[in-house]
Length: 478
Ligand code: SAH
Ligand code: SF4
Ligand code: F3S
Image (cartoon, rainbow, N blue to C red; front, side, top):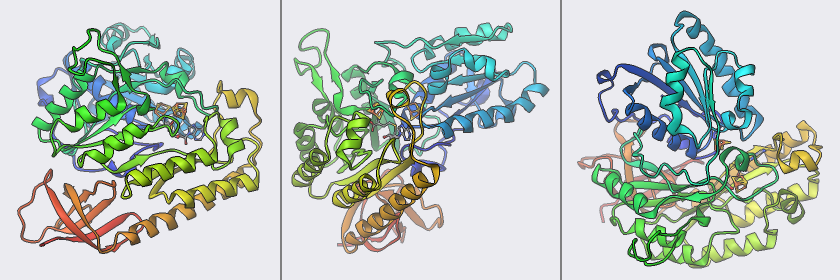
């Protein structure tokens, strides 16, 4: 089973209906259980790990008590994320005592950050594997079975797992993540990701298109192209002309290639760094109806001075001009953001600048965090984490309250509008209702009525009511 503890991305996807595993787990001689924390990249990586393990005769189980191998795919983004994993590990201690042959492995960003230290700190851990070393898992498991503790945290400049077909572990059968690049070359001063995920590299465009085509054939109707900074996607074919483009593939080119797989396959992407999203990407989005009109464009702060300390490389005015450009090209585009409250030396005035830029950008949704100092980052080395906890908390609350009002206002603007909605499944509260999403990524709930629609179908829905997080509508008859 996959679980989110420290949610950095699309939280609303959690807890939905499970699709059956691709292969009957009872046909395997060993069982693994995997739990994922952190961002969508980690969830996507767990599907690659599942594929590697299946090749070794391991079947997935949703019950950790019957597992021969427990894996935690971990996140280091904030201190709290790491604490959650440590707590979870102590819970596994009991089972391990009663089941001596069982192995416990830590994967992902915490494995990369702490390396062999994790084995000393967490005695029950047998295997530590970083994000670029999952191909070595079978060998490491073999060694661990002989009683050795094993570690592989080598980062790679090439690994993209392009040839590995992910096992869709927990899926509604409609939406899937497709990883298009790995690593990050930006050095945002607060961020641990460049240390845990290594240098940026892009996956072969052909393998991405092939994966999306395969998903479409299996009935999937929405893909989210994933990377820490998707706009710096860049892939050069080894042979000119080999990809049919005869040139290197940019993110705008890739979006177009994926959009052309099928008009009924919706395309989303995450995350965009404001400095890298080009006009070409925006005009490509506008040209294809099936590229969703939604951009996650993390601002982090609304103050130019704080942005400089954060090493985000844009100013407040530059970001606002980017928002204007998006709205000019796609007036119906939804925007969301990541915001950090209480970064080092942030003044009250600068905090107000953040509130102000939120109102300017009219975010439909935001992920909002208290600044958490991460060892080894530029900010930890250079600046003092000097905003008192209660001030950070109060500022975060003001940000959360404002976002609540902005989300509600955004939903109110949708009253009376009719949207094309992709049905994902039953609404959580009522089996007589469908739940789906519009292009803007808003959740839409509506009665099934007498129609014989299925998950994966598109339907036009007119909105007559709203909450802060949901649009409520009726199937449009006209
Ligand atoms: N690559 C993505 C973000 C990855 S991390 C991007 O650049 O947008 C997701 C979010 O976590 C970040 O956007 C940031 O808002 C938040 N974050 C990262 N490091 C943090 C820290 N040390 N403290 C608090 N929030 C942090
Ligand atoms: Fe972290 Fe910045 Fe890279 Fe995003 S772009 S992963 S915030 S360093
Ligand atoms: Fe966390 Fe690593 Fe993602 S630190 S947010 S799991 S890249």
